[in-house]
Amino acid sequence: MIFSRSDLPGIHGATRDLTGPKGFHKAKLSEGDIAIVDAPDISRAYAQRLIDSKVSAVVNVHQFTTGKVPNFGPQLMLDQGILLVENAGLDTAKKVKNGKKGRLDEGKLYYGDRSIGGGEILDADVAASRFNDAREQLGDHVEALSGNMSEFVRSEAPLLIDGLGIPEIDVDMDDRKVLVVSPDPRLRDKLKDLRYFLREYDPVIIAVDAAADELIAAGHKPKIIVGDPEVISSDGLRSGAVVVLPAEPDGHAKGLDRIQDLGVGAMTFPAASDNPTDLALLLAHYHGASMVVNLGEPMDVDTLFNDAAGDNTSSALLSRLRVGPKLVDSTAMAELYRVSKTGFGWLWAILGILLAILAIVLIVGLSGDSGFMDNLVNSWNNFALSIQDLFKS
Image 1 (cartoon, rainbow, N blue to C red):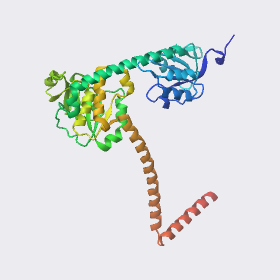
Image 2 (tube, rainbow, N blue to C red):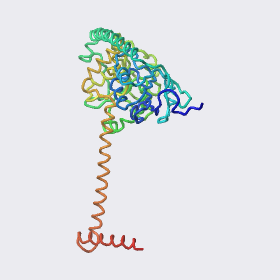
Image 3 (cartoon, helix red, strand yellow):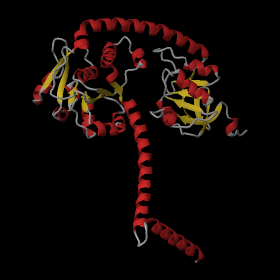
Image 4 (cartoon, rainbow, N blue to C red):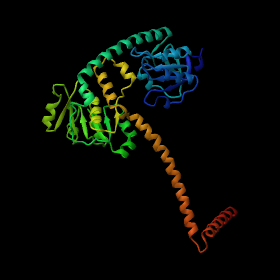
């Protein structure tokens, strides 16, 4: 017996690749589609969008609940009858062809009878169990964070409150915009998105660790470099930027020997935290920056919960609270300029058309021996007669 495609077992539907930075903007979902997502610990909001799109199944390249946070998204989708497959891997996503009819059978994704990968089916009992376990672990993490923050505040209160220990540098940041750039997988793209902000304000740029070399390669010149000299090229260290080395409370700084061998001047920043991004943010704040734009991995609730017991979390959280209302994420700044510049682009286009029409009117009205209005009328009549003769011929 020969089976048609529709006779093959499993859920049938168009495959939609929602992985990558564009996510939902990458492919338009329709009812019955099979969505492939890259969403560990998928949120309730993300799950609701998939439900609203009426997809039949969701294939996650990662696990729907990793145990780091108690996310309700998987249970929400299961309650709506959506089949969930997890741990499919990025290799599966790479083989997905947007819009091509596929099928999902026993956790495997097929095009016809050819499997392109798959994972494990997630059921309601496992989803509920993971949710409860993650909720317990989160409580333990937050308790650990509370203890770490208490210790950090005790040791770093003079730094956080009065800025004691922050080095004096010969870079004017008073009442200026400052851009702190940390290593980021999308650094080049994020810089491109900030081009209007960079052009308009010419902010003071502080590079963190290896981001210094990426900035220079992209044509930007940091005024300050904060970080470990071992991860920065010699050319980067010699670029003319002020080099600040994170140091232990006793003043010992990693990489100082390399700095001395290169003959580059540098200063140390003693602190309990060795996170150069946190130190760069404090440096900008205490030197009078009116705004600090942070380009790098964000410090958000997910990061907080995922690493609540980590040594750097307390430093990251308190340093950002210290900078307070001055701190803006680069993605928010880019979005502001994207909307703003798009609006002005249409405005300038319309204005250009109106000016061109005005110029034509002035030229026609001022040419000829008659008055302004008579010249306009005569020119229009001549134009109309020319068009009429053209159609007659």
